[in-house]
Image 1 (tube, rainbow, N blue to C red):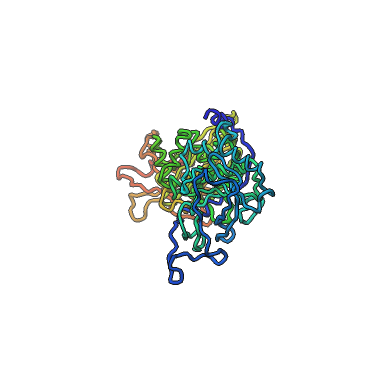
Image 2 (image 1 turned 90 degrees about the vertical axis):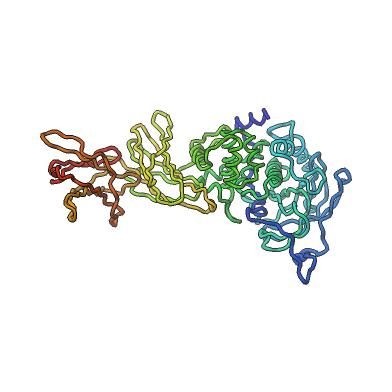
Length: 570
C-alpha cells in the first residue's frame, strides 16, 4: 500500500485511454432480470430471437483444474448496436491463478497472441504499475472484497472479443460486465428491448480487441475497471450508475492506470451533473471524469481507501448510499455540503494526485454586467468569472423552490493570495458581497442542490450581477399615504436591476440642529418591474402623531453604502 500511496501523492499517470464502459447500458438502476415467461407456443419459456439457434445452452463448467487449455465455448454476447444477443465462439488460451482467458476465435493470432495472454495474466495476477508485487485481482479483492463465483470455478473469465458497438475511434466500448451472467437461464430485461436473453452463468469480464489494443496497458486498465463492477455488483446490484462508475475509475487509479482522458473531458465541461448519467449514445466521457474525481476527493479528504471500501460495500444507492457509508466512517456532513466543497476544490485544483484546469462558463470584463440568468442541473457546478474585480459588488439570488441555495466567491488577489468567501443569503435566497480593491479576478460559484427522490432530474434557476457600487444611483421620493395620512411611503428606483441586493432605509430625526436615530435600517420591498427589468422599491411606516414630518430625514443604503438622503417634506 505504501507504493500505491506514493503514486497517488505524486500523481504520475500512466497511459491514457478514452474508452467507454458498456456496463451502464446493461446494469441501469431500473434494470431487473426476470425469468422469461412461458407461453402457449413455448411452455418452457425458451423462445429465442430468430438469429440465435434455439438449442444453445449455457454449459456448466467443471472445476478449474479440469478445464484445460484449448477448451472451446460458445458465449452469449450483447450487440450494443441492436441491444440483442449474438453468439461468439471462443477458446481458452490462458489460465492464471485468478483468471481464465478466453479469446474469440476470429481474433486469435491477429489482434490477440500468446504474448497478449501472458501480459494480461501478469497484470491480473502478479503486478500493476502501482505495485509490482500485486496484481489487479489481489489489489481490488483485498480492498473491496472478492468477486462473486456463480460458476464455482474460483476464477474470473476474461473474454477477449471484438465488441460490437458504434466503433468510433475516439469513443468506443472497451469493456463491460453484464449482470445477466449472474443469473441463470433465459431472462428478460428492459436493457435488451424486451427480447429474451440467455445468461452465460459465469463471472465474465468482456474486453474489447478492436479498436482497443489488447496488448496495451490501456487494456489492463479496462480489466481493472470492469473487475470493480463485478465486485460492486456482489455488494450492491442496484447501485446508481454514477457511483458504480466513479468507484470503477477509482479502482483503475489505485492500480496505477490512467484516467486522464476522462478527467480531461470533465475539465472541458465542468457544469455537468455529478448524479445524472447520460442516455445511450450521449457523450459520457465527462461523466466518468466527474464521478472519478468525486471518489478521489472523498479518498483524499475523508478517510482514504477505507471510505471507498465502505461506499462499495454499502447497500444504499446513490446519494443515500454515499451518505450512509460516510456516516459509518464518522463523517456526518450532508452530501450536498461536501459537494459544494468538491466543486470549489475542482476549480482550485485542490488535489494531491491530479492537477485540474477549469475555465469559467463566462467571463465578464465590463460593468455593470446587468442582471444575468443562469440555470443549474442538480448537483452540478457553474463558474462565472470577473476580470478587474477589485471593488465589485457581486449579487446573487435564486427563487427556485425545493433547493438548498448557497453561493461563494473565489477571490484571486494581486498579492497571490486566494480567498474563498461564502455569500450570506437572506431567507429569500438573495445576497451580495463587496470584493476588496486588491482582487484582480473573482469567480462566482452558485450552488443549488435538492436531495429529493427525483434528484437526478431536478434543476434550478438563479440570477447574478456585478457592479461597482458607485455606479448605481437612485431616484427617491417620500409620499404620505392617501388613505392613511399618518402612514408614509419611501420609494426608490435604482438606475439598474439589483440582484442579490436590497436597499434599506434608516430614519433620523433632526430638531434643534441635532440629528438622532428614529427608526433603524429596514429592508425595502420590491413592488413593480419596468420594461428594462428594473424594480421599484418601497418602505411603508407609521409616523407617530407627536413627530412632525418636516423633522424626519431618510437615508437609503445599498450594501452598507448610503446612496441617497432626503426629508419627508422636501
